[in-house]
Amino acid sequence: MESFFIFKRGQSAIEFTILVGAVLFFFIMMAFSIQINIADKTSEKRNLVLQDTALNLKDEIRLAHEASDGYRRTFVLPVTLLGLNYLISIDGGNSVYIRTLDEKYAASYPILIVTGNPQAGENLIEKIDGVVYLNREE
Image (cartoon, rainbow, N blue to C red; front, side, top):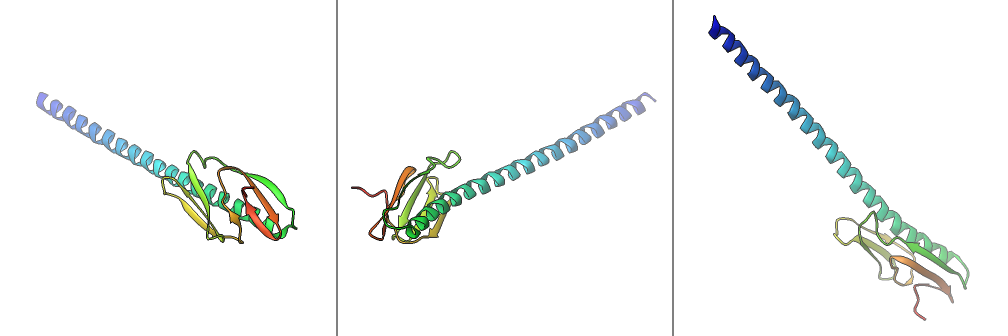
């Protein structure tokens, strides 16, 4: 009779261990799923901020083209994008290219023709004799 009770206690311990293992497994899988979701949202947010910065520059250039001669405006591009350093440039005078230094995020948009290059921080855009200048050196 005594060996029967030892067998029952041993079986209960094994069942308890299996139950705890299953609960732990599901908890870890749920935490992993949440982590992946957060990483995806962070990546999407960084990409949107990058695109927004490039589109803001595109809008500034479009406004300068629509303005009359003598147009002059200072605008600011962020120094970092959600903590990431980035490069922004005008390629061929007719497209804006922006990318993070880790090269995980990048975007390119067509723009109206502009002379000069943007920079992180303060930028000056001008229209002189029908030509739009960005950070013109005098």
